[in-house]
Image 1: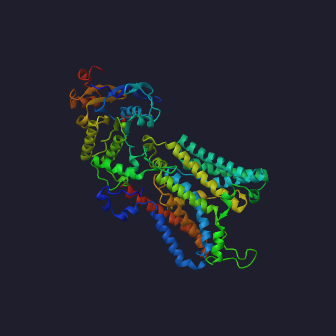
Image 2: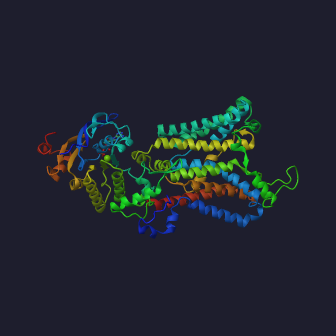
Amino acid sequence: MSDATTSGVDERIKQQSRLRRALIRPELGGICGTIIVFLLFLLFASDSGMFAAQGIMNWSIVSAQFMIIAVGACLLMIAGEFDLSVGSMIGFAGMMIAVFGVVLAWPMWIAILITFALCLALGALNGWIVIKTGLPSFIVTLAFLFILRGFTIYIPQTIERKTIIGGIRDAAEGDWLAPFFGAKIGQPIFQWLGDIGVIETFQRGTRAGQPVIEGIPMLVVWALLLIIVGHLLLTRTRFGNWIFASGGDAEAARNSGVPVNKVKISMFMFTAFCATVFAVCQVMEFGSAGADRGLLKEFEAIIAVVIGGALLTGGYGSVIGAALGALIFGVVQQGLFFAGVESSLFRVFLGLILLGAVILNTYIRRIITGER
Amino acid sequence: MTEPIIQMKNIEKHFGSVIALAGVSVDVYPGECHCLLGDNGAGKSTFIKTMSGVHQPTHGEIYFEGKPLHFADPRDAISAGIATVHQHLAMIPLMSVSRNFFMGNEPIKKIGPMNFFDHDYANRVTMEEMRKMGINLRGPDQAVGTLSGGERQTVAIARAVHFGAKVLILDEPTSALGVRQTANVLATIDKVRKQGIAVVFITHNVRHALAVGDQFTVLNRGKTLGTAKRGEITPDELQDLMAGGQEMAQLEGSLGGTV
Ligand SMILES: Nc1ncnc2c1ncn2[C@@H]1O[C@H](COP(=O)(O)OP(=O)(O)O)[C@@H](O)[C@H]1O
Ligand SMILES: [Mg+2]
């Protein structure tokens, strides 16, 4: 699990086959899958514009969306729990931003901060119920899937008589916090790249001369940030060891003095945090909050995590793997679109790759544990 | 003789209407191996869990180094120097040996304002300690799941000793092991005892107990029939006690009249 060097410890280490060592890394499936997917699309869809600047930005953004929720789901799954309420939480958080920021017309930064606080509290509540009742998190968060979705539809219907609330972009105008979720960065670089002809520029219209890519959305920055922080937290800190331990065997971890309940509840909160980041970026981009936002996101997150090599039973997995799983997800979904393939086939692909990943993971688990 | 490091006085533990322990007293001395024997369900695990902070006794007192003590949770007991290798749940198979070794005691390396898990240190110490115990790992990142049962027990014991345990509690470390692995674990217990650590060794195998024990306490349905010293009791007598104490009357003398 760690790749730290062990200089001059034991000559037997060097004899261990590098291949076998690489095999038991959780990211293996994700790395192979990523290579295969890119090779396939390079071979069969390279002329579709998928690998032009705009195309790359397109699947990067979609992948980044998957990555944000996959990081949360990954750490939670390694800690031994699931959160099926992620998708509903996304819808709920977006709607709360709209209610606070547009309907109540509070300053956007207050709306955002209160929404974060509310969602983190809901995440903690999820975790607290799971710990206190000893029920599977699968059931507890399934309840929250319905509860939160219900409120997300009920609240705007009751106060505004509609299920979509717009005007968020106007409300966020001039706010100091909103750009951290809605802005694009690096415009000068892209302008320069456009000027020297590396990326295309608009030929006509009001934006003539401007590059086709304005800048990198904060959504992508958040995705990268969460991946880096999540990866370091998991592999390089004491808390990361507690996450593995809590999911590997909660009782054994407790007996060794690991504060398992605290770890699990914080991971539920972290998942809620990721869902809220997703929601805020989304409402800033769309300028509106809709009651159906985030549908099925919890499953997409879990699939990305499993493709990334995590075990559904907890205690094993990798943030990098989950991020690669999300990348595969995004590239294939958008790639099929670019290649003009019927989009329903994406679901067939998804089912197949999920099955393949779970089988591979089970096999790897046998190798690691010597199986019993 | 030296002072006992732990004195358990009249410990009772009730789980709802179940009386798992009905007043058990035991003294444990440093540098000695105290064997706790008894059939399944006798209350051995429950007893040592009150010693290691997992359970709070319903009645009774615990003295540690002469002072009364209350453990709120296992962390308290661990920091006081009481290390426990529990019956089934000692190690996490999916995690590496080094991560298991330092679980709950992770070494920290500061980089700027941030605290990081010091993997280099953890890996080095793990390899060293394992070699001292006679286990050659492929590497510190070898998963515990690939170790044999005896090796896992040894990792757990080495871990406890490394973190300065004064009392080492082993709950049936040999019950799932083969002959050679059992011999290894018993040898490890002997090594640990010679370092001056008090060992509490739970088993229901009389031969394993007699191989390393200095004192023997038999539990039967939550009660103790007293403690015998090495040499005061024969294997047959010990076996009979475990079987339910039919020969109790004859044994009264050798058990110091506490029956
Ligand atoms: N947490 C618990 N809740 C209820 N009953 C328990 C609990 N732990 C142990 N017991 C009961 O206490 C008795 C002693 O169990 P235990 O200490 O595990 O025995 P041993 O380790 O000697 O085999 C058993 O009857 C068991 O069912
Ligand atoms: Mg037991």
